Amino acid sequence: MPPQPQPQGLIVETGNGASVLQLPATTLEQIRHIASDPGASTLRLPPPATEPPAGARELDFDLCYVCKHCKVAFPSPAPLQAHQARACYAGRESARGLIRVVQPALECRVCPSERFRTAADFRRHTEAEGHARRAAHAVGQPAGPPEPLSHEMEDVVNQITLLAARAAQDSAAPKEAGVGFCAPGPRFPPPGELPLASAGH
Image (cartoon, rainbow, N blue to C red; front, side, top):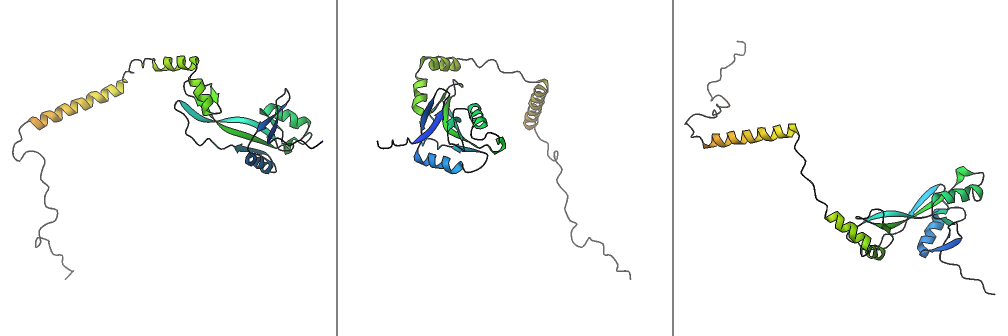
């Protein structure tokens, strides 16, 4: 019997049996490379080449947690820690190593608890009735009355208004010749008026 081809992915222990998480060969190679480093590491999968659709924001989604010793993945940190405590790192907890695999995801701005791995999934969500209801409700919200000014701000506004009114009155009043700002005096005395100091003779 010929050997079975190995799947191109990570084995994920879900608690209800194992499944295979399909990943590109380059990502699997990165995981093998990072696994040789001690401690905890994070591997960010590349974001999609397109901008997020309108109404969505990008965020990191924890795809899985990989044991650096056996390269088995887990959906969350708790089962990984239990696995490592009883199997791969039993008795040597301080040597534990894990890789947090992060995938860029999309979150709906109208429905913040809704997250999607692909733009197509997000678009399907926006076409659903629940999203449409929330979006209509968010748009129809009245802005509410403007907040009143504080007493201090009201005083400042009144003072500025008073100063502006006085300035307008002053500019409208006829000016008398010679009244107003003083012309500056000469900066230096004219030559020849300087007293000569004797050199002590």
